Length: 199
Image (tube, rainbow, N blue to C red; front, side):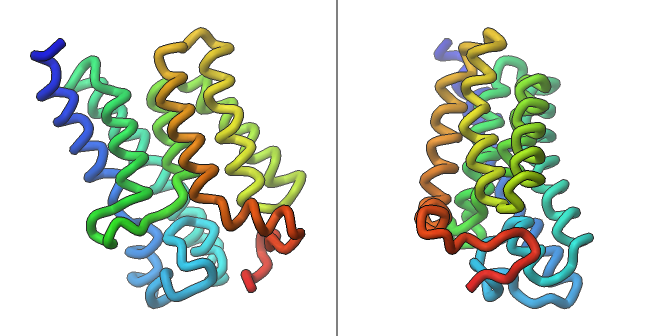
């Protein structure tokens, strides 16, 4: 086990570097939209990019944030066997706490989907269905992300992937913590719906 630690650390770092790429910020700036951190909630994720009014840019941000998590796990699978969970954790925390942005990143919902599809595609499907279904029903981005995150470790346990449950509990817990303001707004009834500007 001790001999594997260099591989685990390498996978963690590779995952972190991929996860820390701030696609929302880069795409918005490249499109002439300025600094996304000065808009809406100040978040670098797809939901805040959508507040710029550019739906295509928001969709691309969501896709790339998802793919960076998936690619991190895929690279670990092929090049550093046995270290997929470390790459997944690295990508997830890289998105949330990118060193390039003084550790102020996104909330992790899309990147979480990416690592889930990489670790176990069935869990990824359950997550995606819950996420999209909640968005269609409630039209509130945070509700979709929170419900999907809640379901992820439960789906892992149901599918017998018990080795993934601790990691997913941690990831889901952090997503809830990152959404603490959204949760407060939901309780107050002031959380904006998709397509509406944030006060």
